[in-house]
Length: 194
Image 1 (cartoon, rainbow, N blue to C red):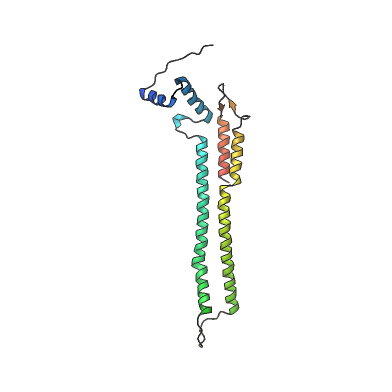
Image 2 (image 1 turned 45 degrees about the vertical axis):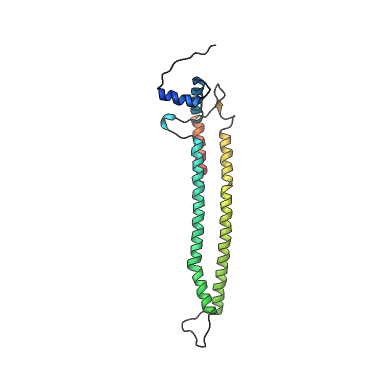
């Protein structure tokens, strides 16, 4: 069966843009590829939509940025507590304990050596806790990059976009139905809210 061709009218600037894009293919093949892309991705050019994959990638980047900012905020809080609370207490205790003692007793200082020892031990424990928290934060940062959630997202997307689920058109292009596109977007949003 012979192919039938129809003439269409387009503006000259649109023709020039189409010429730049089509390169060595025919106008018919170029337009067929464009329409196939829109059918496959579900993108509607009139609405200026971005493809679902681009939306997914930008959402993942912003989620990681928020997680890293939260971890940095936690480090700042812990360091602020150390600088403003623990260090002044430790320095005042050390100054009182190691200062030159004169023969005259100090009035108003009624801290026993046992209490002083407990404060020093508590300070050492808190410093150790801060070191452990810093190590934990570093581990969480590395785990956030290689998180299992990302692997789950990838496997679910591969499953939703597999050959057995998607149908194809006469040219062999896979068609992404609105139902599958919506299901894919819901799945991505579910993982983002985790």
